[in-house]
Length: 226
Image (cartoon, rainbow, N blue to C red; front, side, top):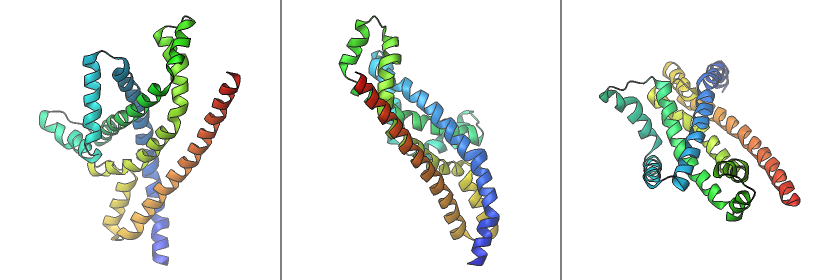
């Protein structure tokens, strides 16, 4: 037991450093770009011309219907066969962004569709254009509803970044694998990595609860003033 505790203490800085340098940036960048892509895709499916909507539906269908690990392998190991070479981190970023974009687009599409039609009519009645109605009336209401599912998507992404180890991104989980290769102590090191992911997820879950409460109070104020 003392040996295991010593090994955990010695490996902790390396694991935390890998998380700080690779896991957290990969998560934040992928989610940010994926959210933008998801919004564009959702709007394309709801309001775009038929050819654009078909392309958006096809993208969502492909990404949601295939495993994330396979998508990463196609990007990192497959694309070089047609002359497209990517470093590990950009390949992972593209893969996670495409994945998050597809899943978040479904969330955004659903919450936009849930806004009552009367809100559109009210916006148009005071002279707003489609773009003004969307940005000032529809998206603020839809955003409040989207907070819980998008937060869950973000928390899942933190854990899914461990898959980037399969394409040689030196993030937290691969850092644990490298230490295992020299210490031959897979059980304790993988448990330690799992505990770090658990701690990150727990902190984010608490932040999610606070964010939901804040938006719930804000929504209540809007309803009271309506």
